[in-house]
Length: 263
Ligand SMILES: Nc1ncnc2c1ncn2[C@@H]1O[C@H](COP(=O)(O)OP(=O)(O)OP(=O)(O)O)[C@@H](O)[C@H]1O
Ligand SMILES: [Mg+2]
Image 1 (cartoon, rainbow, N blue to C red):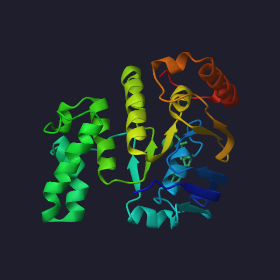
Image 2: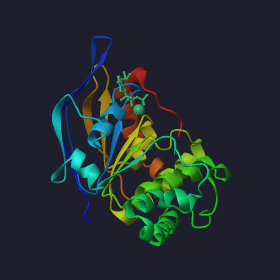
Image 3: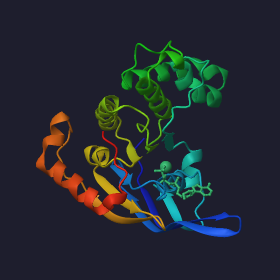
């Protein structure tokens, strides 16, 4: 399956709290190229998760449109074009890693699909570097391993797009760096389109082709920055003077309200 791109136009999201309207997103236009790695970066509360949910068809915007390839976001979800990964892995504690990754395919495919769902699950666990952990239950996995399982679970449905909402936010800095490198490896091997949400400046620069910088009240995109650092990105990337310049520029744009965490 070829990857799809996403095109969003004039996105507005208004939430009502006790009769008072809060404009959470206003006038958001976004083009995510097929096969690209694009990041939404911004301070807490600026609407990153809300925008990601709208792109993924989980929330309907109060105005504007989203197209995923040729489809509406809702149809893209129905035809399993979109996979989601959240900050917490949310694995079923009584199922093994393989069982968790296979579950959705087993449910969709019925009894006969069980063997093929488990074979796919094992392949995906191998892809995320967990070939030997398939029989472990979640409590026997480290935080980084559990998050890899949740990535494998999203990949098992073979979506063309992965939407990732701060997937490594709960991990320590060393594990997070490893996960970033590993995610880029998975991305280059699978050719998926990735939309990644973070409030870490360095994570955004390390991973992305393009960063959409957001600000709040109302949530909007204030700058789109192409990151022209060579790939593959490695431990040496962060020593590239351009890496430091991008970081510096973004930190200045975000001002003292930036919520950068060491990573
Ligand atoms: N379902 C909802 N109902 C009402 N208000 C909401 C809802 N979801 C989000 N909001 C509000 O929208 C704003 C943006 O929230 P959102 O979760 O998108 O921010 P965020 O940029 O992802 O923040 P963080 O970095 O902390 O995750 C917040 O003020 C939040 O309270
Ligand atoms: Mg969020």
